[in-house]
Length: 428
Image 1 (spheres, rainbow, N blue to C red):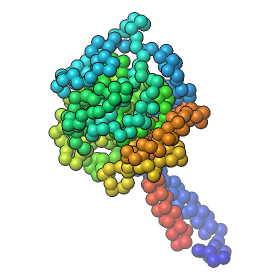
Image 2 (cartoon, rainbow, N blue to C red; image 1 turned 180 degrees about the vertical axis):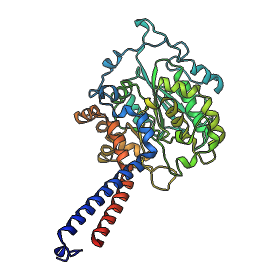
Image 3 (tube, rainbow, N blue to C red; image 1 turned 90 degrees about the horizontal axis):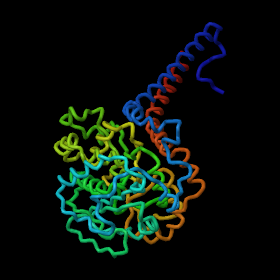
Image 4 (cartoon, helix red, strand yellow; image 1 turned 60 degrees about the vertical axis):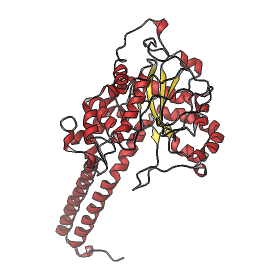
């Protein structure tokens, strides 16, 4: 074997020198690895600190419990102090109240003034499902299966284009659930206006405790009882808010956002969220951050990826799970995510994405038929799934994302260090 250096002719002094040199270079290698890790974590360290809830050893406080399957009777035993529904429209009535946005947001912002009420007036907490749509809901039959037999535990709100006239049967869970709306344009402040409008309408029902934003192309990945228990058993909101140093994150920031929002506070995340009632009230009551984003987050800022994420990160960062609830597959360089058709739907595909998300998008109308066929399997909650929930899936998902971010810098500094090490070993 040909050695890179003629080590057979080395004297004892030369051996000592080479050993010291090798140790020094290995120390340099370790320093390089450390710098690579620190460099990759630099832009995300605030998010890690703010979201220390993810790393708590008390999984009972941070994660959905291992047992998350509730029957309707079990769920109805859950009681939380809540005001009687005085201003919420009666069940089955129209949501077309005719309130202008200013008055609607004002009324909704007052709903956090709650007092302890006698046990006989306490209400079972409900989850508000808010659909932000262009018009029809092509996947409505799948959602009908999802909501079946749990009518007292959820409420539905639909924000469609004002020109759209819904045509739902009286027996549908979506019947008369459209709220007064305005056009919502992609990437503009009108999209956030629609989100705030949905939250405000849902807040008028004091029984609503959790608020989920979905689109017409979303599907559920678990059954209702699992999702209900997962959200109502933790005090945190599922809002993704991270520091993106690229042109698609910090590159969208403008100094005009100061002093309310600094560059270090600027956050980005998925539009699709799930929030607590407290955070929902904060969003509809906000004017401080809203004015800044409305004025300066345009034209290519894509405000729906920054406004709520930044606002809640600044004021309530420690209460965010810092992850999205909805699976989406992006193609590099594309402005919109991939759309799944009937040819993409399989049991294996759904099993692959179930572990880290509650919902998934975007699904074409053609995907409805195979999804309905797989619905019994897709909504079946296995023992394995319940066990995984006890290990705090949000923690593992967040850890996986951070490891992925580390890989680039880690490989770069490690490769350079080994190259320098090999070079000097052959030169000395």
